[in-house]
Image (spheres, helix red, strand yellow):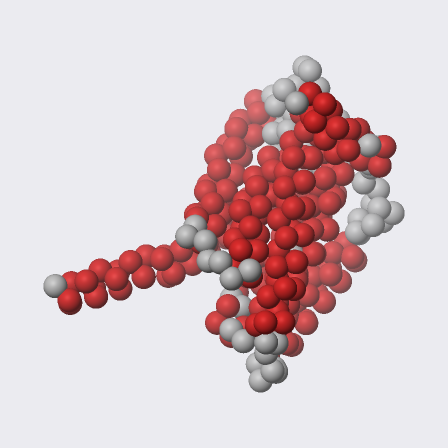
Length: 278
């Protein structure tokens, strides 16, 4: 077991590319406002353009399923690696005299370098890879039903959020990265199973986990804010956290609305049908 842990730690934390990582504005790939703006603009333009031409022929499901399965498998495994890598990196990089480091980076003392920030960069680029979710919906025959404002807004804004994490060396992002990656392991495992013809019973849990994730983010943010206002220089990247908090609040509201419309409504309909038949 120790050998396995050592091997994983070596590849996900100690590897020179990871341990010596440093975010350099306008030099590191993706480390510029122009890149973020262009990426989001291209995504929104292509999505809205393809969605507008709803008469485009849909790709047959037999051809789309293998692509969906491969896409889901890659993101499921990548999410697992990111969750493990970020957890080990945050533990490794936490100073002995500042155990709450993953929650509150000391303001002015935390440059965006090291393995913790490396995995944030991988996470940042993984959100661009997730644009493939939208493409798969647009290529399917159910695009008009499945492509929602929540989906497009979430995919576009999360790229900006990840950029802010790195540009501001924002406190608390290691916790957010691990929780989000863990949820995505479950979500893409479901998509993978569905693409392979098996519909897991836990579809609803995917949305439930996402809602719990956002609620947890606000709880842990309260802890961070306590240290920010009661611990000397405060926590680094507080303005970035403000953007993150507003974004998470909007997503929580949208996911709760989605949950009520898709699950609570079905329960009421099922109960009404039961009452009519009795």
